[in-house]
Image 1 (tube, rainbow, N blue to C red):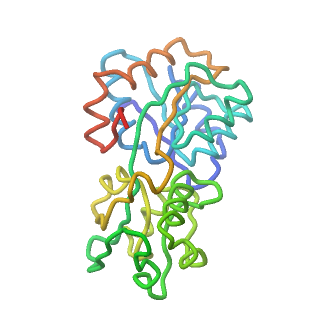
Image 2: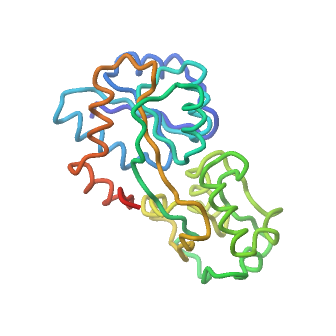
Length: 253
């Protein structure tokens, strides 16, 4: 398999190894951590059909955006929120911007948990945690955490759990805490829950409880790859739709 991936739990520090992989790629993609399995599959399909080499670097959207701003060698950026893409757009560092994907937000528990909760205004989330913590992305910086905080505020339960949040550096770290049984509950994207057999979904947050979860994608302005736009077009194509949907994403909201 020719696709190479790098996944970080915090701000990506680009090592010489990652730079070396990027230098040998035809297209280097910096992408939100929640895209890993689906984007890996898309990259394999594109590589098979085009003969081009795709390298993917995964992490928290805000951290990746700042790495690109600092000169990291990315050809395409795919964020899990509008704000991270706007950060680069305001600096004129991205072109050909599109809304690529949509997602949903879910409440999860370890697969063996007996917890049952119905997500509704005022639902007893704090009681369900008992003396433990709620795993979610840092609501000050991680897109999934921001969406989760907004949803809990909308439902009137944020204040009851605000001091009991295990703040992680990206959504996959929150998923891992629940999967390992280190947190009894967590809030992640629906696609994350599908990717991890060790968790189960207790409920889906109402779509109107938070801003729409969209994944904007764009070509990085400084890209020297002649294939970057072709790969971005492929990701938005009908040919890629079935793969996105298999991993729980939608293209139409």
